[in-house]
Image (cartoon, rainbow, N blue to C red):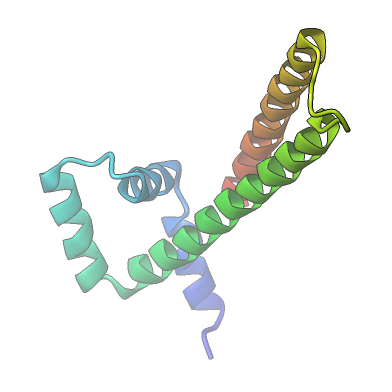
Length: 121
């Protein structure tokens, strides 16, 4: 069982620099030397490996939730668009597009706030 000392080590690793490094790694935004350095640290530092693994799971979960929320929103708009005769007025399309853009912006703002709050933990 991992105790308080282990938790303290992970808390020390929970820095903005480490989080940004992991995010860039997962987004393939690191150059070759940065990737090599990160991979070397993952092989030699078990605590950093655990921190990396936890962050990766967290980031993937946040992205999966965002994708699902967007899918639900798009499905909702799709249902609004379908009309018995299969035609939609241009003004309806514009209104739906505007509403979609607004809701997506709001969703991403909430996602960024959530990510910042999680990173602050």
